[in-house]
Amino acid sequence: MDSTAKFVLNISSYLIFLCHLIIVESDFKNKYKALELLVTKALCSIEGQHLDLLNDIPSEDQYIEMVILKSGSLAELACLIGTILADPDKAHEVQLYGSSIGVIGQIQNDIEGMKSWDKKNDILNKKFTLPILFLLSVEQNHKVTEKIRNYYNGLIKQNEILILSKDIDSLLEETGAFLYSKVTQQLYRNKAESSIMSLTINRIYKEALLKYI
Figure 1: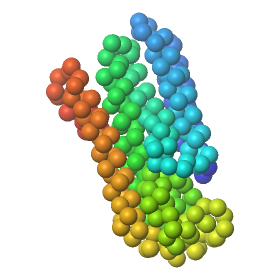
Figure 2: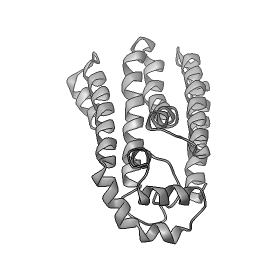
Figure 3: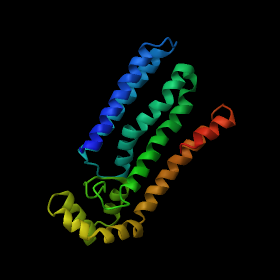
Figure 4: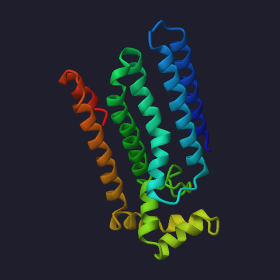
């Protein structure tokens, strides 16, 4: 894990514990339900982060499951805490769009992680993300994807991958890896939008929520 990732992880852990302390000291009627939610979703996110750090995800479906745990749980938590404290009966409606927002954000990070060949590039960091997993699955016998697999397995050096950067960029476009990621992202965007529009609140607030997706 690089220093930036460690910093972000520490900050997120700090905020979760701070949130716990604030709720404990509050006088909300439903604060213990909120605390139970906080612990449950935090544990789900930690499980997802652990799976992400293991970086042993063989398929797109399993990757999405990891993202729902890692990112979906935290977004869901952010959306649900206030709802639970105010009106627990509305929790199910909010839960649906909260998780989807987390998935949307993670897939966007995946796409951004392949836009340039600097130290943040996901292939150079041997990360398995949605576009990379798709590329490796549809081009199993391609000489370029074979090089990527060899790099991930420590059989070749980073400079050999950098030489192929333009070929990899072309393959990501030609195979539809980016398109697949964007379509998957749009599916979750549709889920979130449908959930938000079904809320029994003023349309002004619905439109404000839609800005987050």
